[in-house]
Amino acid sequence: MAAANSGTFFNNLRRSFTDVPFDKIRDRQLATPAQSENLQSLVVNELKIKKHNATEGLLWLVRGLDFTAQALRHNISNPSDELSTSFRNAYAGTLKPHHSFLIKPVFSAAMSATPYRKDFYAKLDNDPIKGRQELEIWLSALEERVSILKQFLGRKEAKW
Image 1: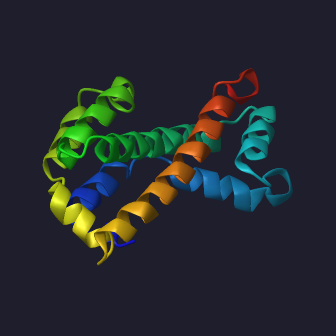
Image 2: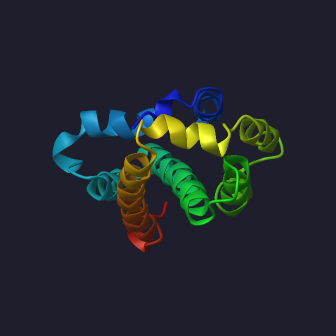
């Protein structure tokens, strides 16, 4: 899919996540591969040594993926809504409650840069039907993984 070609919006969104410590997940996995066979074991083993850098990175990664999944699901389910509406709704229900007053305007600006619906879907694939089918498959897989990780992060063993 050519979603990465949707330019300004995704570049702005990516920039708004630059302070999130995603690299901490990778650093932990590289430092302790035998104890990091999957994200859940990585978190459990990190918390055993009273650290939570990678765990916090995972929490923010899951929030960001949930935001993306909810926005795209809303947009697929509401074919008359523009992407900006879908992303604003998803932001309100996922990331906004965790952001400070300094970060909220950055996301507001990013939402203003969303491509038009017709342009976004046209760039997914030359065949609009195939593009939407591929997006649906990808999105369903993303939703499944986000659900698994949210359930795990809600359990006592994943708290610091």
